[in-house]
Length: 450
Ligand code: PHE
Image (cartoon, rainbow, N blue to C red; front, side):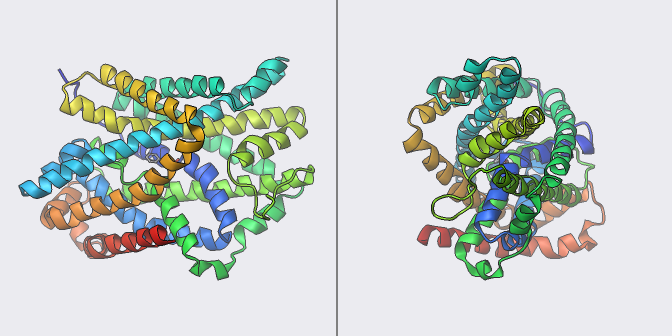
């Protein structure tokens, strides 16, 4: 017997859960380093434009389809398709989304596992367990397997408890905690010597980079990844949303929260990097670029925290707790995609569906860990750079070309009776129909040819 479909009990519950999905490692790590690599303020500007002009309309397509069909992505796209051909394409697109969501979770949980290990490290240091501390911060296969598994167990525990008692309850607990830690850390870092130099790199735009195709491709990829688009996470969260909620408004709030947190993360990470320089650490690579990848999070920042003495241990604890929480509220939304499909299409109980799917994902993560050099980068590129924008495009096409405009209007009307006369309705339908697919296609073509 399949379990009952869940529902978010309040608007705040949905907003915190959807923002929790959106705010993740992509915001706190990906955004600031992408900005530093691509012209600072110019990237920030381009990101905001793309987030509201391309990602928000695509988010709306997912939320509307989800709430109307009250189903997982495979089923949902078939429900809105009028004929056999489009139903088959819808089904395939749904499977593609589930596959990509699961693959994203399999690499995401490896990175989140690193965050957990670095979260335990300050505690080991405080307890005087130096051997343990060295093991936690060394990149061994055993550590990676253990902490990836641990992180997946945490993710499964939340999802097994269901929508209201798992996703909503934990998002409502963790997101406020995340915001408080975030604000505290930013304030602390900004008063350290050297922080202002980092702020300048972050905020002063180098407009000459605005016509660099790499900047646009990176900003679009970042916006789609950050808003968790294309893979059915927002579709399934939308399917748990009550009919009386105003869709364009909640979608706009989630977009705003997500991009604001990304922006704020820049106020933390880049100044911290320049504070590290004051502590004598190298912050530029040999080719003259700012350190950005794993070295930034797992070498430069920990070295900075270590140099700060006792306070640094506390700062490290808060920083990695922040990263782990951000990762967890995102990973639960990724796992919900295959789990909801298994529950609804295979008449399975939520608990069984969750732990089985979690185990399957752990197998894939382990394969990536064992063949790290060959697989990690490949899976990241294939899923986030190509598949997510492509799926976002397909979802826009389904919402606006395949589905009926009147049905969309009716769906939005249930929570926003005057939508017909709103600015949203004047712009969104034709915008999502023509502009979004075309622009996404252009950017995709650009990234394929460059
Ligand atoms: N939005 C999350 C982040 O910024 C990542 C994510 C991608 C979550 C796809 C769900 C689905 O880290």
